Image (cartoon, rainbow, N blue to C red):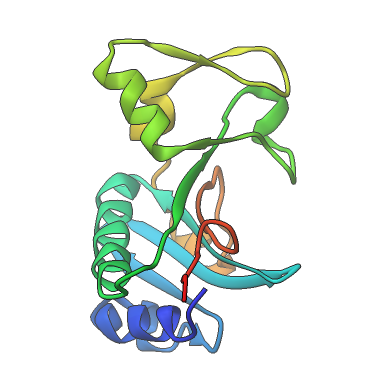
Length: 170
């Protein structure tokens, strides 16, 4: 994963930084209307990953903004390849530290082909595709006590994985 993607993202979204202070070297918390997003850059086993967690009653709008800004940055790299992965929200995966992930393009293909459900390979449960993509199952408003504790209940995490996915070929 090229260095500086998160730094460029922070610069592009500086007007949405929560309290103008929730920013650090490897992450940022953004707010927009009634939604919050935590964007963190991680490196594990030589793989770069940008993890996005969103919460609030308008999380889809904020996630769209975050994905748009990251997309602009990704497009500025000529040979950058990446994958957007969406975590499963079945009963087994929802609380798991290692849920099953679905590629974003596969979920959109299911929607285009009018397939309402997809199989979770961890629990073998059928999962609603629209619920994964649009997060329409349960919207949660952000309460004032939630804002004070900085916890992100019922997170939806979207990952931009690196290594094989972030491949700059010479």
